[in-house]
Image 1: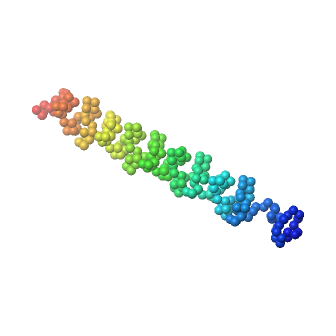
Image 2: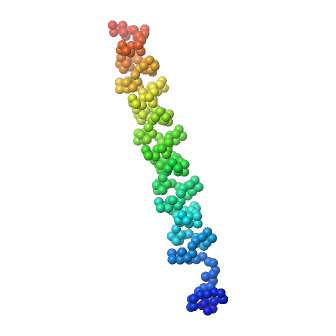
Image 3: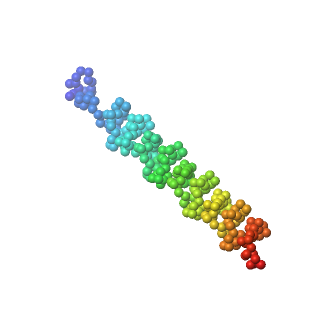
Length: 253
């Protein structure tokens, strides 16, 4: 209809053709980049403008509008998290299922002291968060987690053995090459009746384990070991001559 045929109360420019039902029916408006500023989306009208893959460029999510378009399992593909948008979608205990950490996304969610509880390290996720000298404070080794961080020749520098941690890394036949005993570390691994087989005394190591009154029972002198511990004026009290030892001395004389 034309303006001169319009019902009373309707004003329009002379000669303009319009569809009364279309203009006043309340149907969804076909928005374009040009018209989107004419129809701002509000909480009341947002159902009129559903966001689709086609229209999502019309409704970019900003800090101001993110409450209008909450991210759900259904809509999360519409709003992929990027380096630019990651501040809009902070990961919380509630949202972490929406943004699972993968090899592709792990750089978006770096693990910090604040967020490490969001990303607990498991056997499945250890490859996502390799422990380095920089990150080792984030993943302290405990009795519970030590299986997650086995000590190898490559990683042993990351977890140096100290008096505090030595119980985490007990020396066994399998691991003794990882923790060679040196003058510096010998106090960490004292020789006991249980461990003496781990540290056999050789010409090379005898200085590490000098025989004293306290340790002489650990290293009894035998025909095989007597060359390791020659008897001197200083050490003769350590090896008193007994009836059993007289025979070789008598033969020598």
